[in-house]
Picture 1 (cartoon, rainbow, N blue to C red):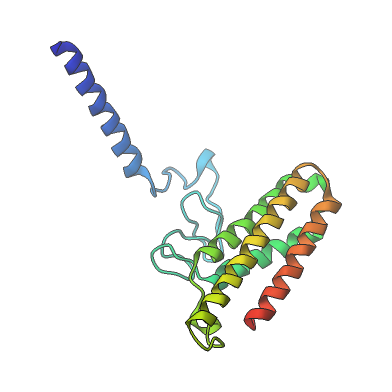
Picture 2 (cartoon, one colour):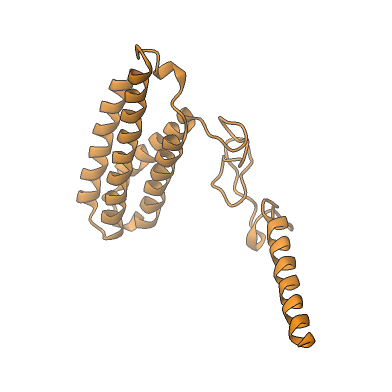
Length: 185
């Protein structure tokens, strides 16, 4: 009985030690050249990159926010950059993987923007709390609809249906114009 207790205690200690090691390593940069396989690290606009993130993103406290928050404006700029490039090449099936990455960048921007509170400047037109709530709900709904369209576009890109993907992206752009008009952006 004491042997099985000892084994169980040892197993628990191993799990705790392994978990502590994984948690301690999160956020560390790889050593030995700053990137896997002897390649130099990719650099963003300022030469930095966040852990496992795309170039130009510096992780928590990075561009546009404190403690990991990214501003809505920063998220929207990321969406626009990816959309501009994607619209020029979505019909090129040879660029399937890059197109999937670009649509993912757009999705990430939408989710980021949807998760941020709407800035006070967009709520000024509201006369009361009910008006503010309606603006916030419209904002959230537009982003939710954009995300659904982007998921559909992603499926079309993955299936090699560039024309259908482009049509969905055009719907996203039309929705974006409508939402921006409503917010006065």
